[in-house]
Each structure stands twice: as C-alpha cells, then as structure tokens.
Image (cartoon, rainbow, N blue to C red; front, side, top):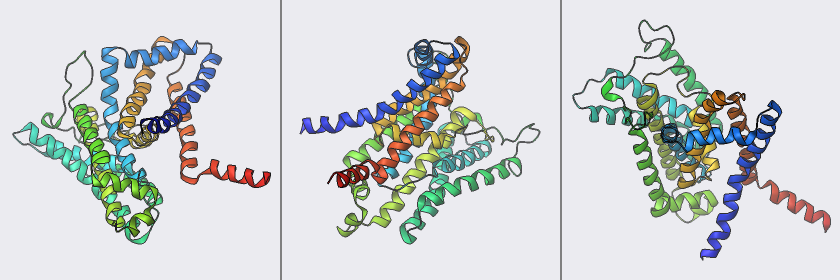
Length: 359
C-alpha cells in the first residue's frame, strides 16, 4: 500500500519539478547571454525572498490571495469543471468589498472586516452561479462562458470605478479608500507587509484539505472528475454538485479579492489585480500544485517568491526584473502542455498510433 502510494507520488513530483527546471534552464541561458552568472542571479532572487525573515514574510503576504485562487481553481478542475472566471470573481469580490469597506461605519472593527469578506465571497458566488446553472442544466461549456464573463466584468468595473464610485478629486481612476476599521494592518514583524489575512488564508487551506480528504463531497469530486456519467448512474446528483463546486470556487475567489483589497490595495484601481491577474496566477499555482491543497500551498509560496525576488534581481545584478516574467511564462507554457496532455491523452494516443504502425 505504502509502496504503491510512493510509486504514484514520485511521477507527480517529477511532473511538478520538470516544468520549473526547464523554465529555469532556458532562463539561465538568457541570463548567461546578458553576461551574468545564472546561479548567482537565482541565488539572489530566491535567497532574498525565501531565506531572509523580511523576504519570507513578504513572500507569504503576497502568497495569500494566490493560495485562495489556486484552491478556487483546484476545487473545480479536480471534478473536470473548468472555472476560468476566477479572475473576474476576484475582481468583483474585491471591488464591492472595497465599496462596503469605504461606506460602513460600525463600532466594531471585527464586524466590519467580517462583513467586507462576506460581501466579497457573495459577489464571487453570484458571478459563478450563472455559468454553473448553464453548465448543469443546458450543458453549455463553462470554460467559454467564464472566460467571456471575465472581460465583461473588467469593463463593468472599469465603468463603475471611473463613474459612479470614483473617488472625488483623484487624479487617476480609483474608488474611495476603505476605512481603517476594514483594513488588515501589518503585524509589524521584521518590518514586513504580512497581515492577519495570511492566517485566514491558511485556515481556509485547512478547511479545503478536510473537504477533499474527509468529506463525502471530496469523494464525489474525485468520482465526477474520473467519470461523470458513471457518477450520475450511481445516483449522484451531478447537476447539484456542479453548482455547489462552482459556488465554492467563486466564494474562494471572492474572498481572495476581498483580502487583497483589505490587506494590500485599500482601494480599487484599474491595476487592482496586476498583470497577469491574481486569478490567472492562481491557475498556474493550481496546475503546479497538481490541484492538491498542500501542493498549492507550496506552489503559491514559490510563485510569490519569484515576484518578490524580482526587485532584488534589479537591484543587485544587471539582469532586468522582467526575467521573472519570462520564467513565469515558460512555466505556464510547460504546464499548459501537461494540462492538454492530461485532458486529451495525447501521449497515449501517439503511443497507440505507433503500436498500430509496428503491428
């Protein structure tokens, strides 16, 4: 039993490490062409973001929303439901949690934070509900619907933040800054940016581990992912499960947006989620972590370390910090190849075709 688990685990670890290794290899060639030592550049990038107290805490801070968006992707992808709308759900949740945080004036700071996070989660659920219903009852491809809704949401929020909810007197497009009571303040550890939101993200991670490993829904996710028709034939209400999973995914994405608003941005701007957005980064984190909560945790920290280490590269070497974007793009490319192979079984088909030719 233990040996069989090890046999399954080793290929998964290799499949995770190989895209990163290939990306770093190609990145190293580019760095060497610039005239710098790749080993020194990587040591600076990862050393200052993972092996110093301030760097590690900042890395954990930026990993918080990535951890949640990675889980949001994983909960649907494991069931072969492709929620590509995590970015839109994050933006929607972040925007309206910011509006609520700027207008509420409760006596309790705790209540204000809870309400802001709840609003973010609710917005994420509402965004995910439409494609969930279309998928469950009309078999509409959720990948297409959620992808298109992302861009619709971006434009809607652009209008709202530049019109009805724009901060008066601001020289750029943004909403009003949230009140102090709604903010997650820094914990003042080693002069880092980390806030209590990281603790909330870890608590959600523990809940998701419990959901995947110890609940009936977790077993049903695996069953739907392996064979939805068989799952339905055994009496499982697949339609209902699709809606539930999409709503959980939306809630996680909305919470990520609310947390990012309350711990980092404090107001909505057109660059709220960054480029690429946190939702898209969450997809990479989930693929890198093999849709496993523990794997996603370490993948989120690694991916965050690349981002926080970019400034150190720029400061201590002649290599531009854009090399990190190159590494991220290469990792995405190699992971995308794996994802396509996993979904369509390309290697298996090529193997069958070769065996037929030999026969």
